[in-house]
Length: 351
Image (cartoon, rainbow, N blue to C red; front, side, top):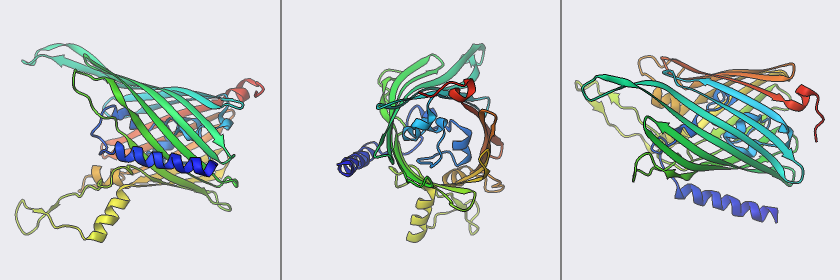
């Protein structure tokens, strides 16, 4: 019976992916795709599954919320680019025979802007911000499968324009009984605008299908995380134009071979991450995002664009994490988070 239900659910996922397929960056409320935790950022920016999940990752995939996160509280803060700052907070609780629930909020502040009229005379200033409430529910089936859903009311304020919307994430995860392997899929940002910024300016949300797996080595302190993103879009690879040496100012428009095209497209969907866990209280992480590197690098000085790294450390009853993700040569975005179990912190007995 469970296998039959799982097959129906997976077919539904594929149908939704085809129905809402679109190119990333062409929708509204793109802030929903920002990395919300240092661990997520350090492993390449996106995760579908992890055999050792943490509370903050449920923002990205609701099926990563589980009963072990009962009465946990997590905060994160991110210093982005050009004065943009954002953060998140989440609390979770397990309810016996019902499932695990979580509530969180994510807010992005774009800072203050100078307002001027058409002649250039400064008339004042204004602000811009986005916010999403996260209402998460997950439930275990057959002890190794978890299904989760995250309903996200969205509010956006840009100058004098305001917009409301509703989005949802649906996630499915499998965890092997040995605790070393997990795999999952998540459909993110299914929804619609309820009130557009201006009349008759309806836009699609940044829908995305992400799948992946993680594997912890049984006899070595490493965990490998493989993620495939933007699976609803099979034409994502961006071919960078090359200067033509045979003609001044010309562009090399030579087409790639079929093998090259397929390889480049496959790599554009691939994100790789590795965690080094020498002891339970410390973890070092590194990630590589091919699409980010290919699209954002400066050819004359590629540097470490597309790479990310971070670490996590447990101090007393707090889990602290830090991460860096490099999008451009101008600098890196910095991520901080703190998580604690309120039962451990205050000595409460778990229900």
